[in-house]
Length: 226
Image 1 (cartoon, helix red, strand yellow):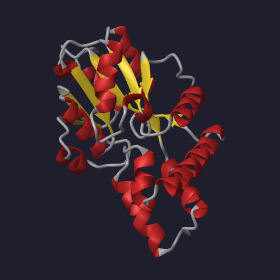
Image 2 (image 1 turned 45 degrees about the horizontal axis):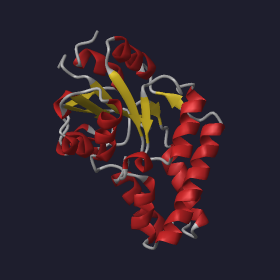
Image 3 (image 1 turned 180 degrees about the horizontal axis):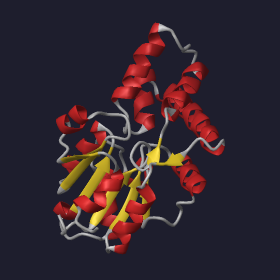
């Protein structure tokens, strides 16, 4: 455990308390696209959004709306709605998340925050929480090539920071099955699920979690740094 050099953390649901904001923003985007809450189409689409929490949001909308143009319109509406919720003070850190990051960095670990949101939304969250300088690097899908469940963001974190000599020296933590899949596909030595977000223990272990924690606040102890 103590050989971990690079820690890659998800944001919404892992280090940032979502509080249902993703679903609220999806409702706004769905309305913009003519899909009314309460309709069968809305129920089907919301089920897909829940199942794919952690995936790049533009990829989700490509699946839901097919063609690129409507997918981009839906994604823009989603990002706008989520940004308004963030600006309205609706975003808070997961209890103990900041302390966990600070403990990891104080122990010499490099910490990277990743997200399935676009960069503009990621930056809005970081600004709202005062986290611009909390970590060594932040990444969104566009920075890496592809979002989760692909391994690109985890591997981009390694390549950009040079923090580890081996992918097995990476620890990944997230609240969704797609976080677990991306970590396993990247070859991370530790892929820890947390129970503060979208998916439960069964979903996390089913997707390959090596550990399941109550929250990211428990990660420093798992890595042996506290």
